[in-house]
Structures are given as C-alpha cells and as structure tokens.
Image (cartoon, rainbow, N blue to C red):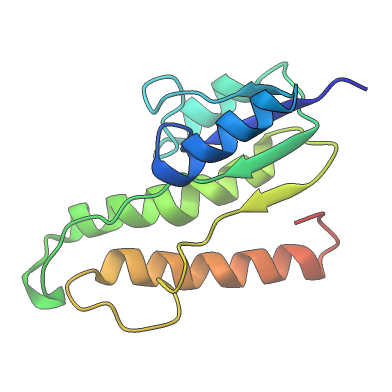
Amino acid sequence: MESNILLTGGSGYIGGAIQSHLRAEGHKVLAPTSTELNVRYLDHIQHFVMGKSYTAMILCHGAYGMLGKMRDLHMSEWMEAIAINLTGTMALIRYAPVSGPIIIFGGGQGGRIPLPERSAFAAGKAALNALVLTGAAEGLPI
C-alpha cells in the first residue's frame, strides 16, 4: 500500500528532518507551507483536506507566540499562538481523514515546565499533551 503522509511544520527543524527521512525511505509526503495550509483557520483546514485521505499524519507545526510577561501581552496575539498550537491540531485530528497513525510533536518540555515570557507556548503545549492523552483514551491511533 502506498503511503500518503500529511506533515505539518515541514519547513521547520524537526519537520524538515522528518520530511527528508520519510522521502528517502520512499514515502509520499505532503508537507504544505503555512500559506497552503494555515492551521490558525478552520476553513483553511477544511478546504485543504477536502477530498483527500492520508495513511498517516505527523503534526510538527507550532509557534512561540508573543514573548513577554503575561500581564504585558496583548490577548489577541496570545490567542493566535493557542490557535496554532492547540486548536489547529484539534481541527486536523477532527477533519483530516487518516487511516493510520497520528503523530503529534508536543514541544519537548514546553508544556511541563515554567517558560517565563513564553506563556502562550507553554499553555498551548500543556493543553496539547492532554489532547493527545485524551485522543489515545478515546481509541485514536495517536
């Protein structure tokens, strides 16, 4: 069976290495740029995956968001990082038809330790860790 893997964050450090490895192994990898698939917006996700199917999905996208102390951040910029790191991941899980495994990179220790001046990243990744555990508990191959 031919693979058709959706990879987000393919232009980043981790995603780029994964993409190179998978292609070297002969897998077909679809690694859209953020212009082609903007995970901040539900309609982008729905339009992008419409009529497609994937044998696996690897989600490596992410954003630090605005850097600064929590009381100094503008809420719309803080929420944008949450939209990328958490909501975009949930929407891809919900809308992308995947027959095989879903692999999600959760940002290392980003959701487990304090990250001063990176609250949006830390909060989003902590929630992402819970999302992955919940998905596994619900029977997703995650």
